[in-house]
Amino acid sequence: MARASARHILVSSEEQCNVLKQEIENGRDFAEVAKEHSSCPSGRQGGDLGSFGPGQMVPEFDKVVFNDELNKVLGPVKTQFGYHLLEVTSRS
Image 1 (cartoon, one colour):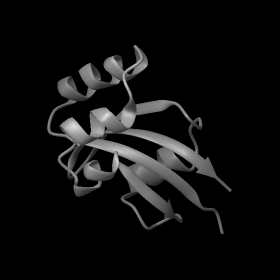
Image 2 (cartoon, rainbow, N blue to C red; image 1 turned 180 degrees about the horizontal axis):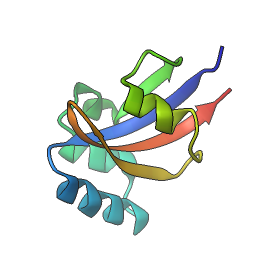
Image 3 (cartoon, rainbow, N blue to C red; image 1 turned 120 degrees about the horizontal axis):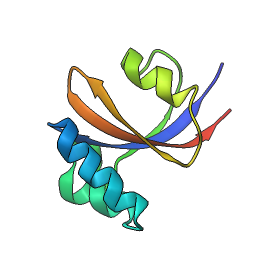
Image 4 (cartoon, rainbow, N blue to C red; image 1 turned 90 degrees about the vertical axis):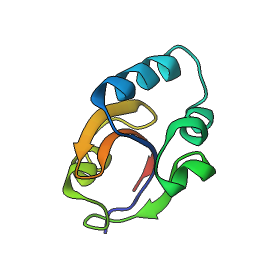
């Protein structure tokens, strides 16, 4: 079964998500931004979600995590929880 490791930042608006994505793309540390801005408890660990398989996260996550580019800031991804920036750190 496929497995992936990822980290994310959860915020309430697409606009904030885009601002944070730009900051990270301009050299700001993903984990630092997650600790400062993410409303998910994982923010305290730099947004780290650990390792998981398909179906363990919401469908919008799975689509990105199991198909898109590794080690790149992806998003905004809208879910019922808000807007996410995702970074897939490994996939097997």
